Image (cartoon, rainbow, N blue to C red):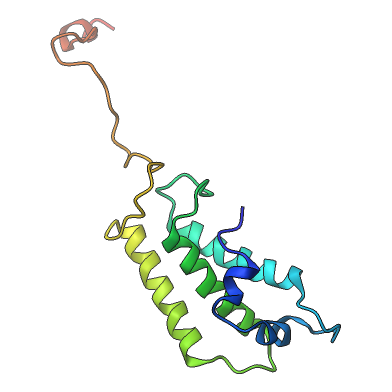
Length: 140
């Protein structure tokens, strides 16, 4: 499941710009496959930083959707050699990477319940009810 859609991107970038960025064949319509490719690139980057969560997200947090949109737009501009990268697009991409680094460090959380434990093992056993003590293990 993609973290954003073409309609999410159109909210930030005019459809005519997306047409220029994706319509290499001059068909007059947005090339959905190229948009999907840019979204997939963005989502792959997001997943690489969010390994402590169950991926892909079953419910896409709003921060992840925003990051996916900003990164996908950046990737659309990156692939189009005829269009110059607007400075705001590069800044938003770099901000997205900064957020993702903070997520990976644990500075920022997404507030989703699907967070995986940090490697600690939970148990209901105590030293009193353990089966194998040091004394019993000496004989094995």
